[in-house]
Length: 395
Image (tube, rainbow, N blue to C red; front, side):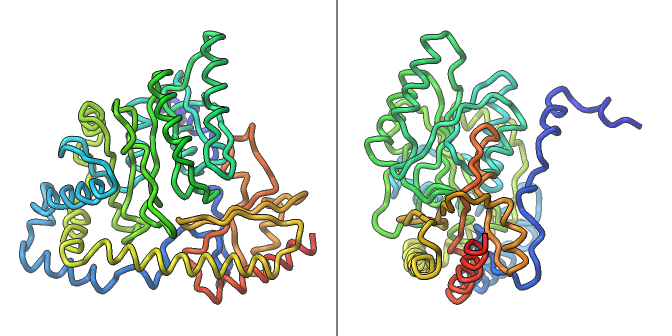
């Protein structure tokens, strides 16, 4: 049987792309994972989540295990809405859609608003899993470079002007990670944030704001694009994966009611009612702001440990940014192909993500790599950098 004869016209081109997650190699046992954009295992609230689940089942019996689930699902929406209000996003209940993680939110947005002829503007570099999602729906991309101040909005404007003057299709959607960017760790300036909103209004496109790391600031909170949005151009995507537990799969889209209604039409009942009720029960029993303070303090300390190790051990030809929040440090190793060096690094006992996976093929840059300070212990951060330094020095 030839499965290709059964594939839809939309599936066939998508299946020509690299498989999802193909950028993630098999890691040797005991390899130091400077590649993993996961929470620190010691900061995942296992005991508190265990108590929350037990309390949920004791109080509600089988109710959370049914299709419709627990009334705490509505409570979760209220809890998230309250947190978003604290960050300057004053939303009606209908303007918030709970999703099974941020990736489901991004996929829903792409599925509902992008077709095979649509143009999507992305940052260069950008989050590789978002690229994987968008490439399932279109092959028409425009990349806008990032510098130390985030998305270069003047280049975005020039691109829009040029395409408009030549009567070329304009982007339907701009995907951006303005705060503690993945992979670069950079943060878009306030002036550029306002410029993005202005350009979206002037050139009639939507903005997908991926705010997965926005709560993990080390110095000061940043105004979200959604909080600056006066014309419902911004679809704000967030998640509790980085601040509670990624396996719970709790994410959301905050947008105008017309957008969330359309997204919900396609999401249907693809929820995780037990996980949502469990998260609501967990949030009932904690002070979220206190937890966020604990996380910021811990991750800032780990960032500083990694930066100190880089300064001490890496050769002078290697440079990096110092992020003000989030999980990642973006490293440039001049004249080296970091994808080619990965096998040597894995053999030495340390993993990273080569920079090539964060670029469209036309923009691919070989000299970069992404390090994460979130998952590994402080001792592992130092040892991992020593191992990486040896690999770079031999090359």
